[in-house]
Amino acid sequence: MPKMPRFREVPVLRSAIVGVGLIVGVLVLLVIYPTLPIVQGHTYKAVFSDGGGLKTKDEVRVAGVKVGEVTDMELAGNTVEVTFTAKDINMADNSTAAIKTGTLLGKRFLGVEPGSGPALKDDLIPISRTSTPYNVSRSLEDVGTQLHDFDKGKIEAALNTFADAFQNTPE
Image 1 (cartoon, rainbow, N blue to C red):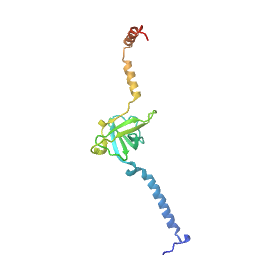
Image 2 (image 1 turned 90 degrees about the horizontal axis):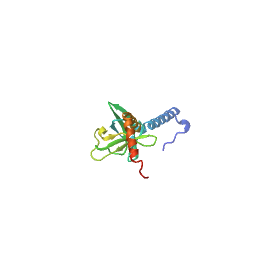
Image 3 (image 1 turned 45 degrees about the horizontal axis):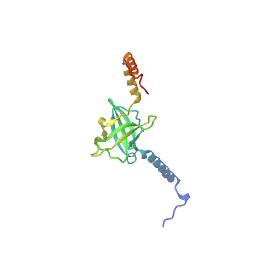
């Protein structure tokens, strides 16, 4: 049986090189680990008519469970192409995606329904199967624009007629 070398007999330079190499290797593995496909999941794309307040790093959910995150958003003409990862799901060719509001403060997430049937072609959900959230501020702007165009005199007359008709109605 070979005899273990005593501490003073171990070459210091070789031990230092091996130790530094192991530390560097562990650090590189820790940096690369979250981006590995096994950990991160498969990458998909979805085309939306509007970004809807979605941002990179927002969650991707299936049935309310986080399965991935939005990794990139890119303007493609008059549409937005959202790249996202999803782990442990099989996307079918009838999959849908929707930008949804997750909190009262407006935090968004990407809701995905994997669908059933043959596999998703080109890992792309087309704009025909995506939807964006209802935008309250845009709707209020539209109402303001429409109200501006109304004839205020006619509206006042109609409301006065309505009030007069129901003036003597019992509670």
